[in-house]
Amino acid sequence: MKRFLISFFVTALILVGVVFYFQYEVMDLLHFPFGPESGVDEYGRYNADDGQEELVILIMGIDRDPDRKIDNQGIKFLQTKSQEVEGKLRGEQYFQTGNRSDTIYLCKYNKRTGRMQLVSIPRDTLTSITYRGYEDKINAAFSLDGPYGALETVRNLTGVNVDYILVFDYDAVALMVDSVGGVKVDVPFDMVYDDPTDNPPLHIDIKQGTRVLKGKDAVGFMRWRHNNDYSQQYDRGDVDRVDTQQYFMKQFLKTATSLNNLPKLTGLARTMLDHTYTNLPKVEIFSAAASAPRLDFENIETHTIPGVNEYRNNISYFIPDLGGTQELMNEIFVNHLIK
Image (tube, rainbow, N blue to C red; front, top):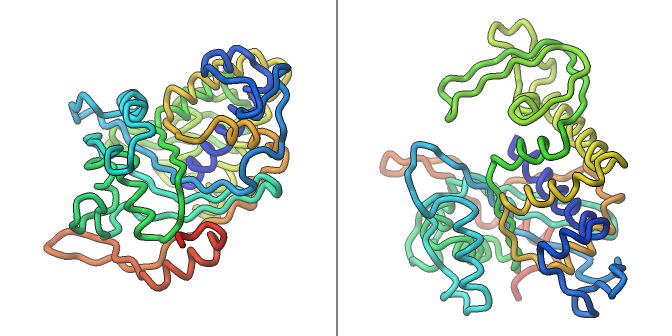
């Protein structure tokens, strides 16, 4: 599910770039500058070759836990605080957020070929928290020192020269689906599943047939594995669930880019922007829009840094294989390594 969410948000980010092209209202919303430095001329045309051919982005997902009463938790605080520290030296960009990153991925996206490669860094990975000078789980870096502190910690662990950040919260998926009026899908059988231990409790009840799924039902459709009584379940387990998620993504993109939905793309972009933080230059987002037709969603490559799970002082950690991690980084990010 988390791999899907990462690819969903990267794809949505590219879609926002498409919105920039079709919707001048969004450009005004973002105070998008015209001129050579922006890649956009006074007529709103852009050069698809502007920006870097390969984008390397650190993507982090954060949960909004209703049981935690932390005033500075969430994307809104992150957006405001990040603007305050923008342009400062690295050490001066650090600030506490109060919540750990739930998902951590390094993403490399080739705008010319549409190839996307994702490397997962388990959130329990034991590593040195750069600004603090001691070891902890890597997801603590986001809580202690914010997105830029997490960025520096990931750079030091992987040796990858990554500068761009994309942070999102999980509320956005349901809201983005709602912003285009729901997504039409073929549900192969009744899906009924409950998990009262989830926070908030998960309840899936979707009837067989052609349905327009909105909000929580759309998320439930992508999360479903089996019915409560196992009367229905995927034959190939998670492989079939990934297929379902990819199918939903295609239907979502088809719906979002349909002629009837073009006026709704502004709302989609607003939702995306309200639930994400990124320091990607607008020209990079804009040029990425040109590659949208080449995005090969079905062949997204996924990797995880090598290592083993281990208990230390009764705490579960993921102990990375540093040599194996460096080999993986050398293979995927060969043109983006710290010199």
